Length: 175
Image (cartoon, rainbow, N blue to C red; front, side, top):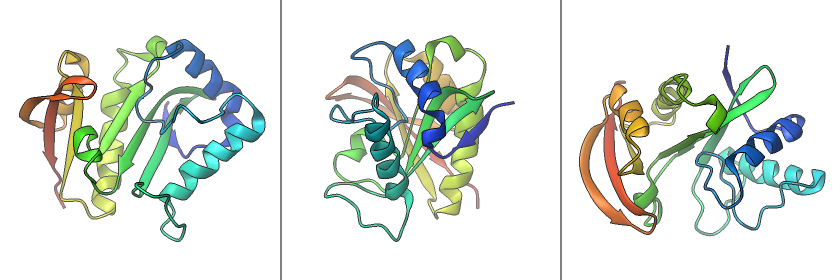
């Protein structure tokens, strides 16, 4: 049974296996990975996990341009199957990306993991006080569009972004 876990150095090897499966240069939504992050070395991975953890901690100061964000990894049998991130607010840049981003490694797709994880993360969005969330996916990513629609996502528009055409959905949260 899958579970959502906070990023942890304990899963370094499992995370690297998922990362390799995505392949070089491919975007892994939901992990908060920046091009400058050194995730291969134990020290670099630990620093990255510490940054992700600090970004969700309300007592920690944020780097310029960052917002509070809760990161979770989708894990089953000590394998990292994907990641999902909840941004607690939107700044100008995040209005292009949305409150929630997620990604499932290629070998774990078509199992309903994104739908399951999104449902759990919408619960966390309610807990941080959000009344509605914006979720954005590539215009041609019909699997993601269906995942968002299963949770009540209403299409606002398809808009051109820096990453290409994107579908913008809003989900109203029940409190």
